[in-house]
Length: 477
Image (tube, rainbow, N blue to C red; front, side, top):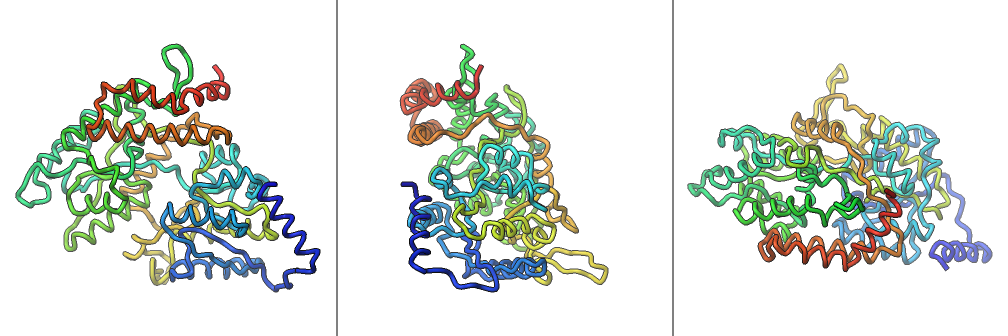
C-alpha cells in the first residue's frame, strides 16, 4: 500500500469513528520551509503581513509555520522523517527528496491551479514553464541558478588588468592575484585566485560552454549519446581546473570548504574571486565585504563569461524538473486556499512584501511615495518567489547584480537532461559519487589527468553505460 493510500485509509477510519475537525471561521494552513521559522521575527512579520493581505481580499487563513532545522541537509532529513511518518503539511518547501513523495502520490499536480491562476502564470520564467511541463509538482519562481564570478573592483584596478574575456585571460587574472600583495600584508604569492566549496559546479557555470560541454548529453565520435562527463571536452575542462590548483590559483580545499568558509576567504583577502549563486547573493557578498572592511569604499565587479575552444555562454539549464520549490499536499483538505497563498506571493502586492521587506526597516517612503532602500535591504531575502514580471519601485539590485541578472536572461539555453525513472536512482547516485570523487582527485593532484580512462571505466561500470543506453531511448537519434 502506498503512503497516500495508507493516509487516506487512516482518515476514512477516523471519520467513521466520528472524529471530525471542528468548524472554524478561518482556514488553518500548515506550512513548512527551511526559510520560515516561528522563532525568526522577520519570518513571523512576513507571515502576518501575508495573512492580513489575503484577509483583505476575502481569503481568511491562519498560516502555521512548522519549525525544522534550517541547514540544507538537516532540513531535508527532518522533512523526510516528518512526511514519512504521515505528518503532511498543506504547503511544503522541498530542497530535494520531493520525487519519492510525488511517486507516492502525495504531491498535488499544479497544472490546473497554475493555468487558472491570477498571478502565478504571468510570473513564471521561461525555464519554469519547461520544468512544470515535465514535472508539475514543484513551483520555484526564480531566475535559473547560474553562478557568476565577482572580484573587488579596487583589486582589479590595482592589478591593472581588464576583465578577462577568454579562458587564457582568466588564468592570467588568477595568476596575477596570486602573485600580487593585494591585501597589503607585505607578503606576495599567498593569495588564491579563486575559491569555492563542495564541488566544481560553480566553475562549470561559466567554463562548460567555453570548453565545449554543451549539455548533459553529447554525441561521441560514433554519433551515440553519452554523458558529457566522459567526453574529451569535459576532460579538457577538468585539466584546466587541475592546472589552476597545481599553480596555487584555485583552492584545493574546496571539497571541505563550507559556503561560509568560502565566503570568509573572500572577505578576508585569502582569495580574489568568488562565485555568487544569484544576483541577490552577489549583493549580499558586497554588503558583507563592506562590513568586513568598515570605512573602505569597496564595490564588487562582475567578471564576464569567457570564450574558449568550445564557444561562449552560461551552462545549459536543466529543465527536467525543479530541484527545489513549493509543493501542495494532494491530501490537503484546503488545496485551493493553499494555492491562493502561493498565487498571492506571485502578485505585485505579495512580491512587494517578499522582495522589499517592510517600510521603516528595509525601505522608506517620502511624501510623494518614492521608495528609498535602507542598508537593511542588503541582508533581506525573498522567502517565496522572484517573479519575472515584478519591477521594484526603485532599483533593488546594485548595478553589478543587475548585470548578473541581465547575463542570465541573455544566455538561457535549455539542457537535454530528463527525469530518471525510479529504477535508475542507484545508478544516478553512484555515478555522481564517482564523478565528484575523481574530479576532487584530479584537482588536488591525487590523480593525474593521464588516469582519465580509469575514471571513465569506473563511471560507466557504476551505472554510466546503463544510463546512456536509457538516454538513447529518450533522446533518439
